[in-house]
Image 1: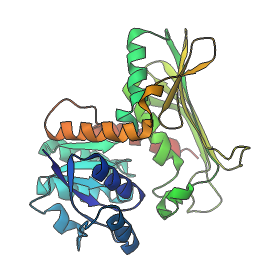
Image 2: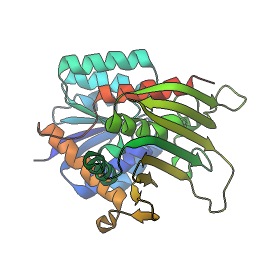
Image 3: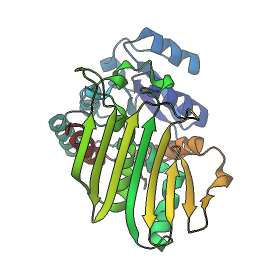
Length: 323
């Protein structure tokens, strides 16, 4: 059974999802909308004869649409999610859930009260590497968990492929803490439980517009200390970004790095895992879309809910407001 999808937002993430749904299958793309004509043209280049709607309202309420995928900037997520709730459509929303805590709380209450099928696209939710870590934690492979380190560094922000999304560079909706650290805040919550902020600091350029250039936090997760350090700038020798989530145990460690790769350490150096799966990022998209399909069919799945995303938003905004 193919689920029919309407795309609200055809920027970088919208186009990625469109391309992957088209390639992987299981979904029928009914149409999309974006206020940017160039984004609409790019979407049409990815999927032949992809229809572009005149306005988002007509697309969301179209009788042949089952699922509304929301990939516009986060300040508008609530607007289109509420429209989907009113239209009785399922919702697949990009993270973050929003940027205003009060608005997001109201959205969570609305979607739960309506019983709307919904989920949020935290990419690590369905990652093979995360499944590997979960299994290892359950069987005690690395002993007692002593702490977690999250390290993010970007030589420039936004990254080259994100430049068309100008809002990502701005304090109001963007920045690497919302865009990237949110994935790891979600992961910490999923693996270890609710996260609380012990201390945090974010540094911004001397203007009222630009997003953070440095951020750090000391967090706690049911007694497990989690340290976060992130920054932008200072080209290193390789020109590569650094993205790591390391779980330190009494008998070993797991390190999720480069978004989807996993390696382990038990005292004799790092050992790469899941090498038989090939392209782990592509595998992640397959797993994500499979789980969205299960959600739509009422089957067991691992997709995060709006309430899960609200928990992440509370952590992220709590860090960003401490300047």
